[in-house]
Every structure is written in structure tokens, then in C-alpha cells.
Length: 438
Image (cartoon, rainbow, N blue to C red; front, top):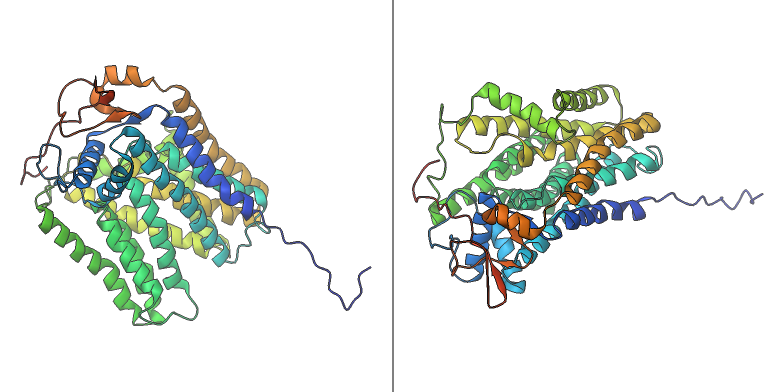
């Protein structure tokens, strides 16, 4: 027996060193499998890629035709421009640049989930158990790769968003409140600016993040200034960017101009969340969305260490509400689903799983496994059902960019052709009309 004067040292259980590699490793492996020959391109994707290549070649934020890009803020294209300037204008460079964002997302969303849990007095890896934490890593890694296959600026948005929410969480929960101004205040404001310069819809996240900071002002009244800055400074930067690039009339805004009605958007919101969780089979999407929301609300109301879950629910509810309002007040071609709602599962599934795991690890592990299985199914089926690059190009030349495909200002229309050993692929050619409102 050990001497009473010499305390016994019990080895600490530290699964995080291994678990921390699971999310990014899975995300990168799945992303590579889904892009082993090239990348599918939407019209928006071409706008971002043309803008990136134009910036890299000194032509500004424009299409290859020279017309300005009016509907999208420039930060994602600026990021891609750095990759293109360093490595070239090929599809492989575009895929690699986005792979960096996907891997970073996996790291940061998992980190956010564990920080919220640990700061809520959940001892992740001990009280919660290893299986739920590992399944959260697996879910995050699969989810970010499976649902972001096509290049959109949301791939940068969802890298910045967990960093923004971490800074907001620290401001809202720090004891004692940090001095004002502090590094945390500056980080939250700077990240809010970057978000809004990446995609206009991120105003929903900025409002949702400012509210917890404003609520925390009862302990530190000067924090109201930070909450105001989180909303006000990004809007000023966004308005300045739009004036500089001539984007003032990029979208119709006002009552009655939305593409769909409020009831339709409400259905899209619920169904869109469900479609990110399960395949659409006879109402399963609505059931999945309802189960996730109900589980979160019940645990938030009954579980004692659920501060992080309540934060995730509040941010999710406010952001979803602001997005719903935005879609009803502007003409937006896309529906309210898909890439606009990825934050909901990324925030709620890990928190529900980890909070439930503190009470019933076996039940939580089962539920998390049920959340992981559809993501794994999609990853496997889509990876093995990809058409070869030649077939994809023949079917829809503008909708696919092979790894060795090159977009160039010198080749604007026509089928893919090999010229001087290079595969030239013409971009989607439907330039916006300057000053038009869509």
C-alpha cells in the first residue's frame, strides 16, 4: 500500500489527444474521396472562382468578361486568389484551398463543442465518457465534408463562425468580466467584420452573437458598447465595401419581393434542417428536426450542467429567426436550407449528445451513432457513385471543373478543350447586369 504521506497518482484519462485528430482526419479523407477527380460547380461557384482568378491577375473583383461581381462580398474570392496566385488557376488548387477550410472547420467546431461542454461543468472524457466525445468528433468530421462539396463562400463562413462564437462565449461567461476594451472584445468585433465581408446572410450570426454579450452587460455595463460594435462596425464595413464595389442594388429588398412566402420559408426551414440529418423518406426530415429541437429543449430545461446547450439553443434560435426574416425581405434564388442551415446541426447535435452523455452515456452514444450513420451513408454512396471527370464534363461542361481543368480569361465559351497540354474549361457565362436587382 502507498504511504499515507505520499498521495497515490492516478493517470489522467486524456482521450482528446487522439479524438482531436478524428474530426479533421475524417473530414479531409471524405472530402478527398468526394473530389478525387474534380469539383462540381454552381453558378455562384464560378462567380467566386472567376473573381479569385481576376484578383490574382490584377483585374479586380470582376468576371472574366470584365463586368463587376455585384451579388457576393469579396472575402472568399480574396482567399482563393491567394491560393491561385501561389499555385495556379487549376481545379486542383480550388479543391485544395477548400480542403484547408474544411479541415479547419472540423477542428474548430469540435473545439467549440468541447469548450461549451467543459465550461458548463461537463467533464468531457470522464463524466461524459469517451464514446460520446469520440462520436461528436466523427459526426463533425463527416458533416462538414459531406454537406460542403460545391464551392460556396459558406466554406469560409463556417471556418470563421466557431471562432466568433468562442469569442462571444468568453465575453458572455467570463468571471470576472474582462476589462474593456480587451482582446476578447476586439476578436469578437474583428471576426464579425470578416463574417459579413464573406456573405451577407451572416448578419444573422452577428445579431445572434451580439445578444449574449448584451445580456452579460448586467455584470459589466460597458459590455453594451461591445455588443453595439459587434453589429455596428461590420455593417459600416459592409456598406463601405458595397459602395466601393458598386453592389448597392445587388438584391431586391422590401415587403412582398421574396421568392417564396412566409409559410413556404417556414416549411423550408424545418425540412431543410431535417435534410441535413437524415434522408428524405416519408416525413423523416420533419421528425428528425423535431426530435433534435425537442431533445435540446428538454435537456436545457432539466439538465443542470447545460449552460453551453442553452447558449447553442439561443444562438441557433436567434440566427434562424433572422435568416427567416432576411429571406422574407429579399429576393434570394436559393431556398432556406442546405448551406444556410449548417450551423444548426453543428451547434446542437454535439451539445445534445454531450449533455445527455453526462446523465446516460449509453443512450447518448446510441443517439449520436444514429446521427453519424446518415452522414457516413451519404459519404460512402456519393464517393462511390461519382461519375468520372470525362463523363461529368460531357454531361454538363460548365457544372464540373476537373483537377487539371483551367479557367482562363482567354476562353470564355465553348466545350472543354485541350490546348498546349492544358484542359481549358469555360465558366458559367451569365454575367450580372450592373445595377440590376434580382
